[in-house]
Structures are given as structure tokens and as C-alpha cells.
Image (spheres, rainbow, N blue to C red):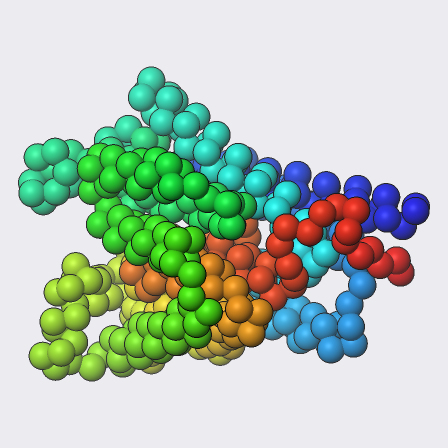
Length: 383
């Protein structure tokens, strides 16, 4: 009994600290300076390590932990980024956590933070309530609403993540009017933010969840898994071709369809011109010069974190999709497809705050276990 209680206490601490880190990450999206944030995150890492220490792992999982931690240390040595170390402790601390409680807490943070930032930015106390777009055809004569966040795309991305949390919690019993409300809110936010990527991906996820909810078919998991693999490979191939500077009519058309994001790869925001995101600047474990930001998320992973961490990242996502397919959980595949598609178009999840990297967190949650287990029905391990 004492082992069970200690694990429950560790779980509650983990979720509470995760919520605090998520809130800090959302504040950074609003360009809010957080004093001593680096030291706070290292303190959080120690807490995640303590929680991970009371979990039970197989020999293979322990071996994988050592390998991933070594990769994280190499990333830190090459770039000064500690996320590789922090992410390993965080994701291992997620094992045996009640995922329903975890994502319910995430949903509360997403919703409350977005409302708080909108109010504060409207009062002129933080962030930007509106953003002026140089393209007069976007938004209201070039005016788009960001509600405190750095950009309108970030606002829509946070709302998208909140919607994903809602679907995780209520995927089996979602009544039609909830879908109607979610669709209405999404349409309203698209009207205000004019974030086309967020709207398109969000609408696709809503349509997919609607089909799963009201059309009963045994092969849904096979179909969605096939769509996931096809889409994932296509987006990865396009990204790699762009990174290798492949130029032809097809790539030009794709660039036009994705609003010139390939053209953006020629630009830089830091002082070092040569550190562009092309393949010749990719390194095994990142490079300290690679600090530019680009929308094409798959390229950003390889460019910013390095080839080895990027392969581990994408392998985790594919592994989660395979597990969901084997478990015949089509709804998980729909959410993974939506999150990975968002990553292709927007690198909004790149942050030193691990919970903000929602695709990675959700993929690991799928790999670790099942959803919806009652507290008394869960199995606890003691060490």
C-alpha cells in the first residue's frame, strides 16, 4: 500500500510540475521574459528524474534510457541545448501515469492560459492583441488577432492542442453538439487569426473524429494507418528534397501550395549567414551556429537538434502509430496524423519546454500505455 501511495504522490507531483512547465512555455510564446528560467527547468529535471526513479522498467527500456541520455549529453555538448537531457527524464517519468488525468490537466492549462493572455493583451499588459500583416488581403485588411501570443499561428496552434486534449479525453462519448461547438470555435478563430494551416489541419482532425464516432467500420485503423504512413513519408521526402535544394516544377508547385515555406529557407535571423537549414549544415548532434527558425518542422528538427536526435524523434512518432494500429485505436492515429501534419507546416512545437513539444509527448504517451483505466484498476510497481 505504501508503494502505491508513493507512486500516486509521484504521479501528482509529475503532473503538477508538467503544468507549471507548460505554462512557462506558453508564456515564452508571448515573448515574456522569464527570469532564472534555465535554473527552474534544471530543477524540474531533477523532479522528473526522481519520479522516473520510482518507476519499473524492463532491461530493454533501461538500455534505451542510457542510449537516449547519452545522445542528450552529446546534444548538450555540441549546442548547449539541454532539452535532449531533460526530455529523456520527462518522457521516462510519464510511464504508468494516468493519461486521462495528465491530459485533463494539460487541457485546463491550455484553456485558462489562452483566456488569461487574451484578457491581459487586450488590456495592454502583455503580448500583442493584434498583428499587422504586410499582406493586406490577410485578416481584416491586414489586421490579424493573436490574443497575446507572438503570432496568430501560435495562437491557433495552442487552440489546436487544446482540441487534441479534448478528443483524447472524450473520443468515445463525444456527442454531436460537442463537435458542433468545437467546429464553431475553430471557424471563429480562423476568422480572427486567419491561420490557414491551423484551420485546415484542425478541420481534418474534426472530420476524422466525426467519421470514427458515427460510422462504424472494422477497418478504420487500417485505413488511417495507411494514410498516416503515406502522408508521413510524403512530408518527410518533400522536406529532405527541399533541404537538398532540389528545384523543379513539382517542387515549385508544392512551395506555392505551402505558402512559400521553401523560399523561407534562404533567409536567416541570426548573425551567421552560413548556418542555413540546408542538408550541408546538418550535424549528427546539432551545431551551436544553427539557431535560425523555420516553419518546415521536419527540416527544423534535423537542422536544430541534429540527425541522430531527429531520427529518434521521428522513430518515436512512427512507433506510436504502429502501436495504435496494432491496438486498433484509429482515433489515436487521427490525432498523430494531425499533429505530424501540423509539424510539417509549422515548427511551433520547438521549445526547451518539453510539454510544449506536444507531438513527442503524445507519441510517448501512446507508447507507454492505455487510456481511461480507473485508478483502482491500474497496476503499480515497487522497486
